[in-house]
Length: 303
Length: 303
Image 1 (spheres, rainbow over the protein chains, first blue to last red):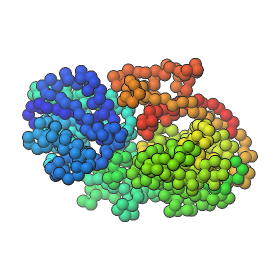
Image 2 (spheres, each protein chain N blue to C red):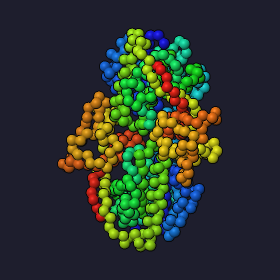
Image 3 (spheres, rainbow over the protein chains, first blue to last red):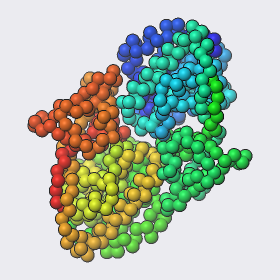
Image 4 (cartoon, each protein chain N blue to C red):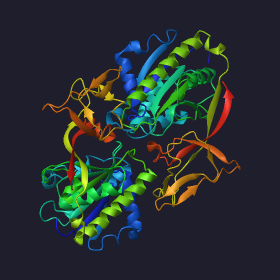
């Protein structure tokens, strides 16, 4: 990443994640909230999924934030599904996904019901987003870095239509609601991201001393226990684990509890490793995806 | 209420309120969980809204728990809306609403995202549900009584197809999710309700000494500040108030916070009273109903 000329700030990519919706709405009505923070770049605001916002639901026909893989974008099928049409529209406006995209940086503001604080999700080891995110972990309490690497053309996320992106995932906030203190912290964080972009464009951010960060790297998703694929879930997140995102889970720790009160323990990984760090624990939107939590591995790095 | 012969335990009247769904499912598969607790009555289990459960949404076309007024049940309109059809079906099975209903007691298990603990909602001053609920406030922590009086034929709630009903409203639990400790406490509470019914049928519950209870009586619903009807909300629940259900709110206390950080204070009631006790604060399902919270009045009574 050299100079960042075009930035997109998105909210409402999931229609019921209202922090981003309210942020974009406020900034559209009050451009002074953002338009002086990064004078070296052009900043655009967008509502990802207006139809889902109207319904106050995650999506109407299909999860929009799973519709941006190159295969999805190139397809001419599924035109009857709103989100596939919308993904192609957004790709036309801010992409096209790939080397010739118009957008250098996309900040996509999401919410989670999980206890994840201000989570910065990086999809690639991009020097700017790594440095800026590291700075933010120093400046804001309860800020975390989740690294979810994936080949960019395959990745289904909206952010990947840009050269670089950060998915800002903020919780715990119940879908369809607003939490005033979360809104205020989120707005400050996105504003700082724009200021740090200005610092980068002036060549100053690059010269900051390396920062020690904890990086939580995606390992695998973990489903709920079920009698067979498609059956109702046979157990709930264990009360000892619920709400303990980013905490070490060791082999033998309590993982689920069945409806008749039996504990199911974590058995370790197939490769013999005995610790993981779960996130997205009990996220409401992931029941339909059969994800009880995402397991990550924690490492310490200098960014 | 004399003898209680027919009891219905319902879950999933709202499809994404999963404590009741899981409870009914567990009990259907394991009748031993409930069928010895009240041998003097016939206990039936029912999923209120199977179609909404499948969608993991509150409802498909219309809020089922707002479709049981006599006018709604008598109407032959809206047959294209699933929940109006389902309400008439449930009324046929467990009603018909009115003096000749087959059901003496309906326990309807709901969840709320608000911090309301185990809330027992009584729709009438029925001697049995008053006494049983009062006993439960002694036996279970974080148990509350909300009295929401309404002329029975006008009331839109499922429970009102029975002679007596309690809506058991449990939170905070995010819609679409399960919380293991909430599930376990809820199951014990519903089981105790059946045991207390047995006590009533034996004439024993009636002879218990009066119990001092705090009763929260519905006063009015309070909407979000908006520039005009139908406009987006102009403020959020104030951080000092969010999560503080059942606490006294006095004239001058902080009520909302605007998106630019200004506080909106509670101004008191039109009749000059200066205190209310809000519940259902920031309930996700009530954004679409434009209810930011329900205001109640707290009184101490002997039940």
